Structures are given as structure tokens and as C-alpha cells.
Length: 197
Image 1 (cartoon, helix red, strand yellow):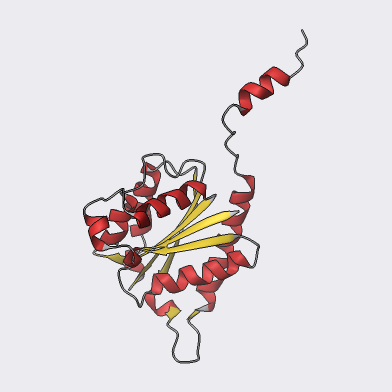
Image 2 (spheres, helix red, strand yellow):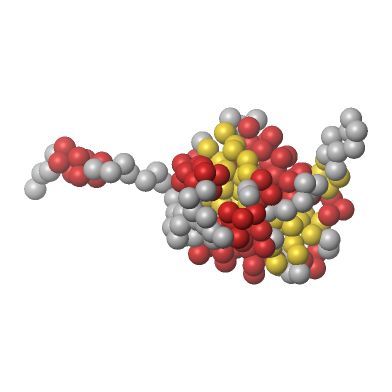
């Protein structure tokens, strides 16, 4: 299984990146390959000018195409998700998330921002035709601790538990999702089938 994780924060110090990193660790412990991207790693000019021919954008699009699932995490700004993340998602083709399972994650200063996942982020992911969109997670900033010196970043126990539960559901959804047929496979199967009347 291959999962692409996308962090939407333009900041180097990011709580959503902390949650994504923990998700990566938990998925890799299950044998899932995770390829991570952060919007801040893309040249701003490529995103702002929608440069589909940018080598970094092309590599990202190819990785998303190969992926079985995506985890998308973003901070909440002004009751919506990151504008930098929106510019990256806008570069994806219309049906980029068909045949994929998607887990949205958002972080914000208070529970008042929780609905940003449902009313801002999920509609954009649905427009990209995600095969299965999971409930998603909203994490309050005070549930996430940055790494300090030799102390690693950590999540509050309640958030850690919710993330583990969401990733269990995500992993199960990845395992049961239908695989698209290879070109010509359906024709070969029909030709090789034995028909009786």
C-alpha cells in the first residue's frame, strides 16, 4: 500500500506537520509506505502560476496517481483551510482522487474551528472525486506539543487515541477498496470466461 501525506502549512514549525508525522509513523508500523509532502517545499511561483510543467509538481502528481490513499492535514485560518494547500490541490486533475481513500485532518486554536474540515476542506477533496472520504480529525493546538531539544514532539493522549482509531479505519478502507482493472483486463476476462446457456 502507498499513501501520500500532504501538509498544508506554509510554516516550518507546524502542528499539522506534527500530526502528519505521527500518522506516518503509525502507518509505517503497519507496513504501509508513506511519501510525505509539505506545501512549503514547492516553489511559490509554481503554485501561484499553476505551473503544471514544474518538475516538483509533476513528481507530486505522479505520486498521487500511484497512491492508494491520501492524508491531507492543514491548519485552519479564518475558518478555512490553508490557501497554500488550496493552490496545490488546484493543480490536481479533476478525478485525481478517484479510487483513493482520503483522511482529512485540521488543526486550530479552538474547537470553534472544527467545522472547517466539513465545510471547507472536504468539499474540495470531494470535487476531486475521492472514492471514500473518512470522517476526519480536528485537533486543538493545545493537544500538540512541538519537539524541544531532545524531547520529541507529542500528541495529547486523547488526540493520540483518536488518530490511532482514524488510522485503523483508514487502513481497513485501503485494504477493502476495489482495485481499478488494468487496461484490457476486462476484455481478456470476458474472452477467457466459459459461457453456458
